[in-house]
View (cartoon, rainbow, N blue to C red):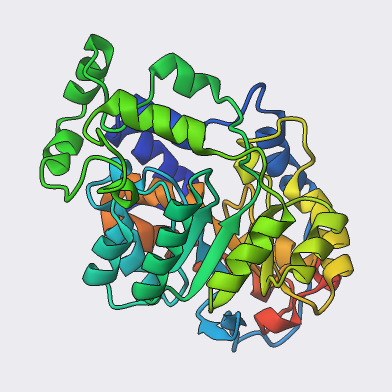
Amino acid sequence: MAGMTCVEDLRQAARRRVPRVFNDYLEAGSYAEQTLRANRADLERITLKQRVLVDVEQRDTATTILGEKVSLPVALAPIGLGGMQWADGEILACRAAKTAGVPYTMSTMSICSIEDVAEAVDYPFWFQLYVMKDRGFVRSLVERAIAGRCGALVLTVDLQVLGQRHADVRNGLSVPPALKLRTILDIAAHPAWAARMLTAKRWNFGNLAGHLKGEDDVRAVADWVAHQFDATLNWSDVEWIRSIWPGKLIVKGLLNTDDARSACAAGADAIVVSNHGGRQLDGAPSTISMLPRIAEAVGSEAEVLFDGGVRSGQDVMRALALGARACLVGRAYVYGLAAGGEAGVATAIDILHKELSVTMALTGTRSVNEIDGRVLN
């Protein structure tokens, strides 16, 4: 990872090292990608207030998330298909997070299973849950997360129906990749990636293993997943999850004050202000534009986490200044995973850490817990 100076360096390396179909999956937003672009553009418009002649030699980036101490106000967000960016990618990302002292969130749609990660890493990672039509399967996932000693359950509520990502449709995305000529040529152009994948624990959705008939049939898996997202999802489902999950509950995918208050009323310990990385409702506002009013509406009822477009330590500072307790970073760390496996994820976290520390110094800030609107122009 020598020479990787910023998240964009990791992104460029990832584009060279991973087949296009999985690069496109990571990068794409839904439809015209207006919300995807707004997440970044609105963050970049927020300027920081430079301060000088303040003693900032001793700076502390540590804080707590849901009562647990973390080395910086960052958690790794849930990302589907992590194990297709690098063999056993979920295990490697969890290991890097443990070493760095930040939470890792495993996706329902991961390649490695809950058990794979729990056995490989002695660390209470978070588990992200989709509520699907098959409630028996949902309950079994919660039970497996309990058995895996997961530290928190991240309930994603903004995927009742799937927003279309044009690139995935054009590429015919499937896991494992369907053997079309175009796909074969793409994989052949990335021999190191292909060689690593031959050593992987799994090449399909690990959390579905043993549940789905025909799980070795790419088309059968894709069809099952597409039909399992549930348009009837409502607040009673959140209350049901709360009743069967004994640990910390994080509700992810909130973009207005009414929903944020409802999540608190349903028993959420934390909420995530999120538009699914611009991958669901295109034309929705950026997350940073909604963060201040949601944070104000929630107050002390739940911790407010933030995601959407975070690519630097400066972005972390912006979100904290506008009311977030911490940021979930997704694409930023997956670029590192795709570029260099565990070392790449560690590099991504280290870049964010160093950028935040320098940004604190140049804004006259000694502690993460001091960050508020005073650091913004």
